[in-house]
Amino acid sequence: MQIGNINLGEKPLLLAPMEDVTDPSFRFLCKHYGADMMFTEFISADGLLHEGRKSLEKLKIGDYERPIGIQIYGHLKESMIEAAKIAEAANPDTIDINFGCPVKKIANRGAGSGMMRNPTLMTEITAGIVKAVSKPVTVKTRLGWDHDSKNIVDIALMLQDAGIQALTIHGRTRTQMYKGQADWTLIGEVKNHPAIHIPIIGNGDIHDGPSAKAAFDTYEVDGIMIGRATVGRPQIFSEIKHYLQYGTELPPLSVAETVDLATLHFAKSLEHKSLPRAIFEMRRHFCTYFKGIPDFKETRIKLVTSTEPTEIFEILQYIKVRYASVD
Image 1 (tube, rainbow, N blue to C red):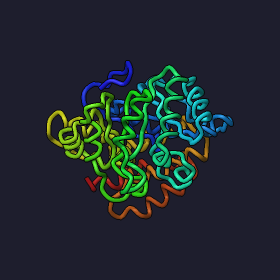
Image 2: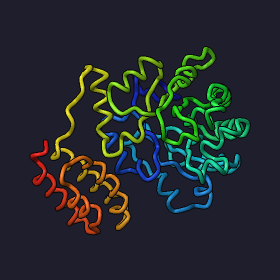
Image 3: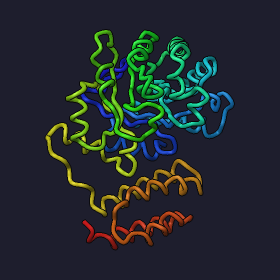
């Protein structure tokens, strides 16, 4: 699969942009486990134009992360174009436009998946960004606003004409949010449309090797983007690649291996963020890393309430010893 001059090889796996998840520490792990391309958390165009601290922080990327895209969102054409220029100055490999976020406060003002209700403006924004930057421009979107307005085929053709070089489609409408099962039928229809020549990347409900293989085989997408299934499980990239190559599933990580992974993640978080933010933003990850361990409630409470890095590292090592017999 090729995006501009970026060669991602056959059947690449991409890390989806997720707010408060795909920060530098988490991206480090996903790259380690074989993610072929990653994206930053999505960044508000207004935040960039007003030099918001959090928005500017999200522009920080490392060479080891490449290829990586910076994703922006907004609902005003000129603001989006200027934000794309700011993002390009951070030297990503691509500029990605978020036309898929279903969150109410974003979609209801016309940004994210709200743009699905205004294809003309969506196309104008996209064409303006393509013209304003030299990096390849990509888009992530959904099937449509609701069940009665699944306009992704028309949208895909319009965005391709506007100059994008790849399109990621999440197999749900905006009103579905993340509920129900992702519908890949329309993703496949876009991919196999005779007029479509850009790479089509499918997204939604890919959680293991068999589901990834089925998506590639059935819908013939060029790549797969994985989002929620990576949380607490960045090793999913290596698991899926192993399955695609050998047809067998890797054994799950042991408790000791999971502790080592969580410890590395926390250490990287401390490198990139100040206290107490580095601790607070790791808590959701700690909960997912150790989900399903029996008799873990008391330990989990200690892990997600501690405010001292040294104590957290000690708790992690305690988990490795105390729950070794769970494997």
